[in-house]
Length: 304
Image (spheres, rainbow, N blue to C red):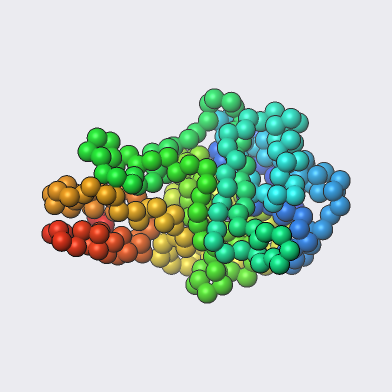
């Protein structure tokens, strides 16, 4: 296993307390939501005061270990998100940047009330202006081809659509809240650079570690459950065949690609820019181009 990928077994607060001040560039994590889910040796069913005390302790450590230009992305359920927001902003003095909605098409069914179809992610920075944000690394293809700056793509916005990691997916692990790799790919590309250190104090099935492994980041993952720690280590040793999820817009075929030379050049550039980490999506993209421009001449391309 890459020595830059560290997996620690222990209590998040205690393990974070051992890390040096200002030592990580990014924290991205999916902590327990206190919804009574079974995490093996931990059952998240604290009372309100206990849960907020737990949240306050680990978030305090998070701010301490973040570099001055660092950021935190925090997944959080709706019941506690406003309270956690207040801790970050009002108590810890961090700067709010974005409230991201992860939209998915399949979720928990309800017969009384509306079935949930989203999770939320809070994005805060340590400094109000000086922080890493690599927009060009996370742009999505435009709806229409434009000859000027077209390959720059568009800002993905704050509503992200990624499929759950379904139980039939070969990458699915025995973990109750496994998140898709595409979510973490976007976060890590946006708010860190190659060689930076990323921290996930509730690493669970090891998604953050796996994505950092492929994006050339250092990563520290912490989990109190030793079986999840071993799960993460095994995952890091497995062959990589592409991330288990993708924003479907990355396969978007723009309109107005009517010039055959422009179209062929665009297809190759699209593959190399937007699908460079998702090789399994290339065939679908090329087929979509062929279907859309069936009456036009098009050569097949592969990534370079």
